[in-house]
Image (tube, rainbow, N blue to C red; front, top):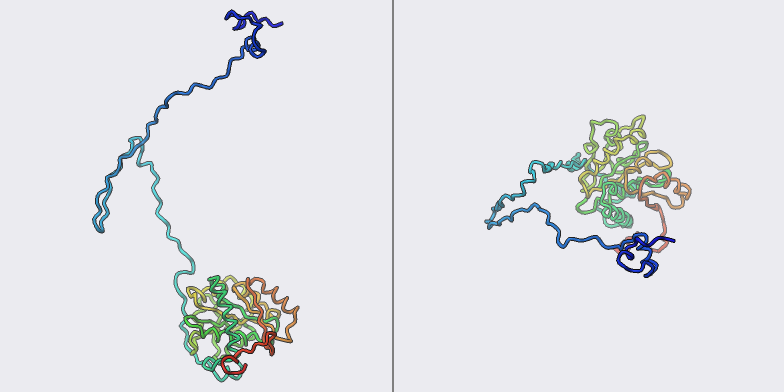
Length: 342
């Protein structure tokens, strides 16, 4: 049995066997009651660095009063404070100025436009013009919504030859030229069989391929002016033995960026070769924000359209344009509202 003769209860004259089990255990083994640590009544205040208040003087008109110097504790070393670094001016590439066109003005052959069934600028409204007004409105809406140079570049092509992609390119450019406070650049990118100059009755001249193959030539210097306000034309240029390779080079992005640099109201239309017949269409799709894939009614097959869409997959927005349709599923007839039959 445990000897409790030396317990605190025994020294105080009490019976060591009295009390509860915990009290006797505390007496035997020395369990002291738990008490919180003493907390001082008041903590010493830390010496803080204080600044003298600044007396604000009256400010005269156009003159700023200089405040008195603020005296801080001598322990603060003013020379040890970091010195602000002067801001470095940010340089944005391609924003140095606006690229404007100043080519020689050429006369568009109106009789040639009429013979080929194209839009004649000075003629009265026609069903053809109304159709392409709808097309251009959708293209402008996307360009305005996105607000990028890419969205203002439009590729027009077809899966196979003979489906009317040049017919649609020229008509679209003529319709866009009627827009107020805007301009359109029609680029002939069909290097193998260029036909834009022939459709408009313009003379042969150097163009896009010359700018791609010669770094000393700026594409904007080769743009041709026309007597149709707002319409500019860039020819395909002189062919080479490596047309596709020049188009796939890194210089293409620089050349095409200059065509839209600093001109938020300029649309650029590329008349490219058929997607399934030549490679330039797929290369140009990487540099445009919209594409019109022309399908000829009762001629273009579904598989050809699907293959063409795959080749143009680099373009984020591909639209289908049905050409040479002689009926309307909705029964609408454009042009009859204005007093003429379409």
